[in-house]
Image (cartoon, rainbow, N blue to C red; front, side):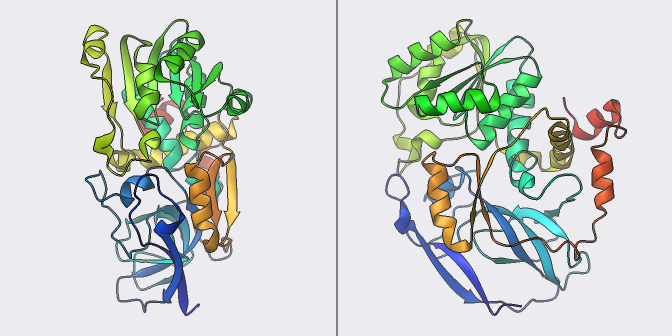
Length: 375
């Protein structure tokens, strides 16, 4: 066992868009486990736009990171030491492990045990994990797309946006992406079967609104909002009667030191006239349904109905660079940082059961819907 744990700390709150000086890579002595605790060796970390909100000194749907603390992040780790009778050494777990090589927990529910027979490790941080579940539940419960409808997705090439598009396509919808550049627009059409894609960079709100109108000649029924800000304002005038807006992210206002500075027109007249439904989505509200979603998404991957692209960097020292690649839209897929390989010999989870759950023989379609609570 190592004597030191390498970590990435938040040492400065961002003034505007986060930059490199907010992070500091360092190390700390490895803590001695107390009764009831267990230690994970983190295998892979996920870089997500939502982490920006935790850097701010303002109200959010999760706790902020205090200065000097290890920066938050989700990841997958393997239990390498345990003094908790309910947690076995070797198990692979998914949860908020933070930007560090090792993490210590006492609550066995803080990190959920996962089955690598169901999906590959990296998929649990992408198409099958929190990312996939965000797209799955946000569309199913709030967007409620129907065959033949148009689904507009901002940040369409992002990990969440690309999964949302594939799910909507599987439901018979027409999908349109909003992305940063014309080059990226061509790429997402090729990679994720968007019918159309428009770019926003260098355009006014009115110019972008007109581009959306041309790409969505029948209007927009569901707007999957990963960005907020001016991009979302441009989408508003294209919404159809009884349209649904799912607010999932705030990437376009990540440069603001205070999100209350995000000002735009008052749009209540449009909301009222078109009877538009707008609702925020936080995947933490779906903890009791995550496992079912993972099974459904894993089945779709095996069946070739969805795919997930990944952009993997290596080593804890690369975490800051990986974070800003994600934030700047430079990553070519879900941005991950690999820290270590899983020790397959230690993992005693019955992987055969995971493989069974996504086989074509089990579960039956009726049971699958019951397990997943979904589509």
